[in-house]
Image (tube, rainbow, N blue to C red; front, side):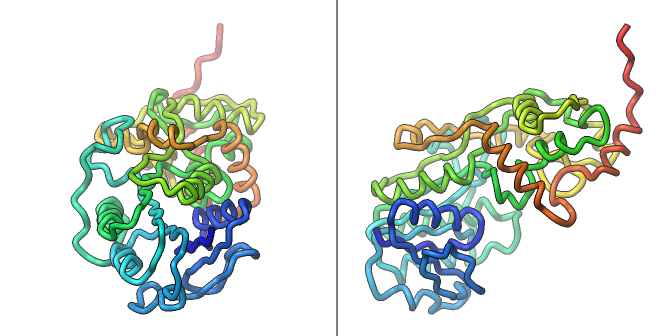
Length: 329
């Protein structure tokens, strides 16, 4: 299979390229900047902001084109300029209009599409992906729309899936500060599992829209798995959301945060989806422990400030503000 990956040099795109190469396919990656595509892939440097960016790959018909972009204008030019037997577009769970609902299926209502060519910032991420989906469908070429959930594992630059195992591996005391919301629904898909299934979708010419993420589990099970893979003796110390807010601790991602959790009922189902359709079409996800163990290995070699979670100083500050634990009698 001759596969064109629009991207292929960053995290998910690179994992897709590796998966396709591992199955013996010919892979070409098109991206801006210098090549960091896998060694066995062809690389074409092009800036998709330019109207003629795809000129170097438009002179033949591809067996599959895989696109990971978030900019509707880029997708519209791609379906205009490229010839392929099959499209695979990587969308997101953020397209759904009601993130409070847990495990929505593919028929759930979507956000209105972005009216424009470029996603200017993350506030329009969901609408931009809706517009991208519409552009792919308008091509009338068979297409797989993959609505991905939270992607984790080695290479997770956001630090969301790596923070918890890293923190248990490097505790600042006898306990680890966690949210007092043990049942918060979480779902994570390993980047390698998603990449493998994307290649399967291209190979099998799967037509339609598919949710793709891991099983929905409570936050307390994620925390327990993180402690387990870190071989940690530290125990979770649950802190109420209002206390965390008073101390300036946020949620979900970013600095001074507790990842994978959102203190807002309107967003309680944000990362979960019903994946029955994708699983019936071959999606297989590995055990969470394996994903977190490899995310920990990645975090242990990371340098510089961590993009998510609490620093040692921040965790000590939170702990110092809490009542002293009552010793057992």
